[in-house]
Length: 492
Image (cartoon, rainbow, N blue to C red; front, side):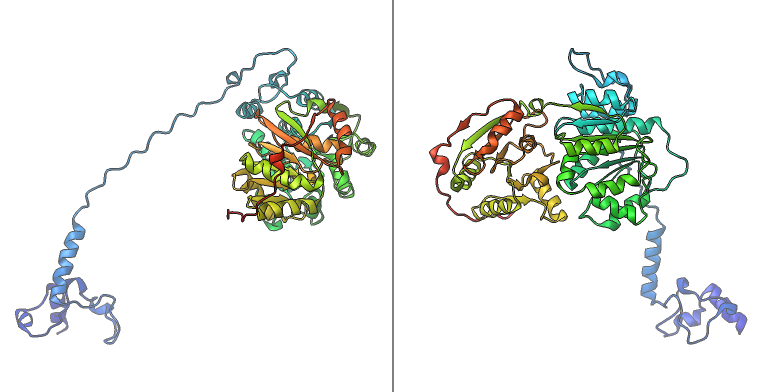
């Protein structure tokens, strides 16, 4: 019997079994295992039994499966454009009297390639002077405002130094070779952006540490790769250093940007702690930049530098010739009406307004929003995540008017700002130059308008003395002083 059952399973049913009325029979596809592999009677089988109709369907489906599928024609990819290797001969700048070319310095092809991409044919005055000293290894102190090209000057110096000196074979991820300290988050981000553009062909890694951002996220980027150039605010850098995540004993070049502003903001004790962790000043190159050379700034420079070259760019060369400057004599009670009507009547789309105090900034922004103008504020009270969102909205044109303090406004580099309005004249003349430098950038024209009232007009003579010229004072047209009709701001 056992042999008969095996034969039946191997060759199918007998004629008698085919005529039997049993409704269910095993199909060829569901033939069970041989006797040695049979399961217990009540065990579930891996393939269920099927009806004869199902069996036919199974045969049809298997036939379909067995048929070779027609191959689809492969979509041919468009050929990639050939990569043309950049050559130094591609960057040609004719010598011009009174101007210094980057070709006049011994810069690497990788760095020259990046400079070519950025479209820098000639050095700015501070770049020409600073590079002459720093590329020779000297320390330097520079007096210059933002917008003069000082950032590129110290970055080119750093990159050249790091390219010429190979890194130690053994070093931790958190051991930067160059350190740049700046007072504000916005300035740090801008410096890092410029550094990324200049290092893109060199293989050097740029990292940023700023307060108000996720600490662990910044730590992860530090753990992922070696840090060559570190740009940081003093407080956050100290956090990393005190936790043992960053070691500063391999710093070859240190830059202190806007030293006067760091003094004003009370950062010098933190900066001193940081500098103590770096090599002795005789073993590192130190560059210090400041908008002013006060006695305090010069004392710091004496402590932290060795026989530095002193480079000064006069203020009259800083105030861009592309900026048209106006001053309106206006009563304090009429300043807001003048601001609102200037913006709305002229349909200005990207305006920056400066005020001296945080409470002034808040009140101006709140009134503009109440009166239907898409405005936002930027001050030290605004959380970092909101500051980033605000700057992006302003850059994208979603925010029409950005109201800021001097500290928050420093380091903002946004192209396309058509007008800068000084709602109150700055108490420090150098801040005037910083403010109007937010417009007239990248070769574009710009306009600055200052409101001079009874409370702040006394600042005007010192501003004019700094600029070396008079600015005509005008009376605003009557239609620009009309009352403001209240509206509701449209949602972004």
